Every structure is written in C-alpha cells, then in structure tokens.
Image 1 (cartoon, rainbow, N blue to C red):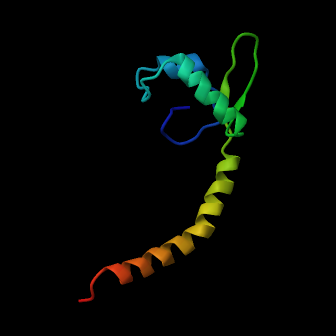
Image 2 (cartoon, rainbow, N blue to C red; image 1 turned 30 degrees about the vertical axis):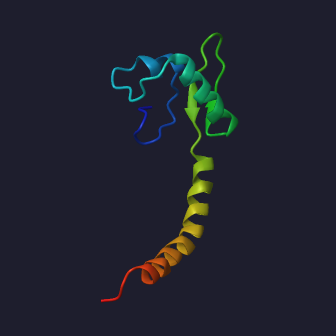
Length: 92
C-alpha cells in the first residue's frame, strides 16, 4: 500500500511507513504508531497481530458511509452557498 494513493488491501507495518524513501510524512515511528491506533479505534484500519509484527490493513468500508453521508448533505450545502452568493454579490 502506498500512502497517499489508491487504497489497497495490502498489509503494511509501522516500520515500513517510516522507512519508505517516498514517505510523505516526516514524523517519528512513535507518532505513526499513535496515528495508526486512532485509525484502528475508528475502524479505518485493521491491526493483524503476528508475533512481534503488527501489520495494518486499510478498511475502506467505513469511508463509503462517510462518502454517502457527505453526498446527501452536500446538496443542501451547495444550495445554501448559491443563495448566500446571490445575497452578498452585487447584481450586474
């Protein structure tokens, strides 16, 4: 899984995230670990315990729910912004 690109079902270890030459996040392994714990708590990644290694796998299913929720409420946002624009911008 490459961070910042299309999601994959490939597992990745904390150490690999920190050691990749193309890594986009100049943060420590401890910080990566804390972020992964938060993501695991939210159900967005899955931790797989294998002896000392703990590879993580992205769980994109919860993000589909977020996308659907945003799409539903986005229609109201777009209408509201249009009305606000008509109110604040001068005609002509």
